[in-house]
Each structure stands twice: as structure tokens, then as C-alpha cells.
Image (tube, rainbow, N blue to C red; front, side):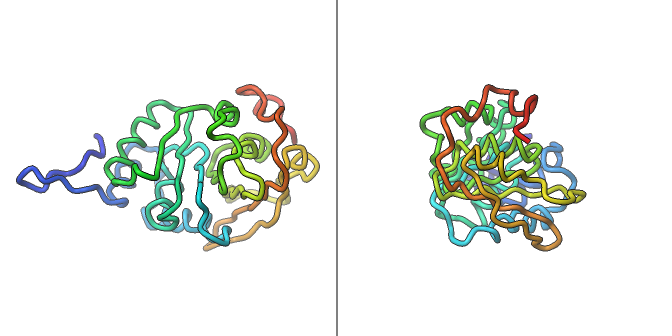
Length: 217
């Protein structure tokens, strides 16, 4: 199944709706079993932690496009959005979704590991906001996100439902130029916002796989 435009008769295609895309992503088991309403509400939680609409956004480990596609379609409708994922198959499908939603002029799909993307001269330090949903443990998420953020930009992470205590180590975050600003509940879900207060040092991110094998905290 592909999210190609639906023929309305007479050879006139129409764009897919976001609901149709999310239904298909659920059938493919890439967005979990949550309802469309729940996925939309969870995506809106990220937006609640960002004061103003950003110019550039990156969805880290986009998977099925949540929250990236939802945010691009329903919230930050002028922002340029990058959907980053390490799976070529998922990226190919995300490209079809972007085309079917007719948002390709401002939403791009990038196939790469996050550690590689952080070394890409086009992507590095190029984003006002990075979003992360189920990407990895805090140390891995921070090291992969920091190189992608412009100074002053923010990383917004959704915390797992069973998370307890402070999951972020201030000293290790400082090595990446990050500071944790806030952890907040929005509609029953918990999100953490971190700010890139200094440029991420050139030594980060480390080689692919190293942030996971040897986390900073």
C-alpha cells in the first residue's frame, strides 16, 4: 500500500488527508496503536513548548512521521521541516506521504543516521527546533540533536510514561552546549525542552553507534 493520490474519477487525483496517512502508518505498525486523535494531541504537545513558530524544524528519527508530519500540516505551516530517519524503507514511504500531502515545497525527507546528519554541512547547526519522539535514551538523543541545532534553538523531547526523576545530566549537557529549561505535562504527556546555548563542539556527534555504546551520561 502506498499513499499515492486517490483518483476521484475522470483522472483527477486529490491529495491524501493527514488522517488517511496516519491510518496507513498505523496499518504498517510504524506509529503504534494510538488513535489519530491521540497522535495529533501528542504532536501538539511539542508545539506547546515552543513560544513562536520556527523557521526550520527537524524531526529526529521520524519513523512514521509523528510528530513531524503532523506538526508540518497542522501547526507550523510556514516552517521548513526535515524528516530524518536511518531506515531507507521508512524514508521512501515518508517521501510518498509528503508527495501525497502536497507539502514537498517545504518538507524534505533525509535518509541518514543521526550521527551522520550531524556532520552534514547542510544540516549541522541549521535548525531552530529539533523534535524527538521515542528516539533513544536522553544521552543519545542529546548528542545526536545538539549538532543539528542553531545556537538559541531548542530540542523538545517526549518523555516515556514511566519516566521518573531528572533524566538529564546538566554537566554532560553542557559538553554539548545544551541546557535543560523545562519539563512540563501537556494533556497527560510529559515533554522536556532543552536549549542550545552554545555551538555544539566539533567533536560531537561521535561516530555512528558510539553515543549508544558509550553514552555521555
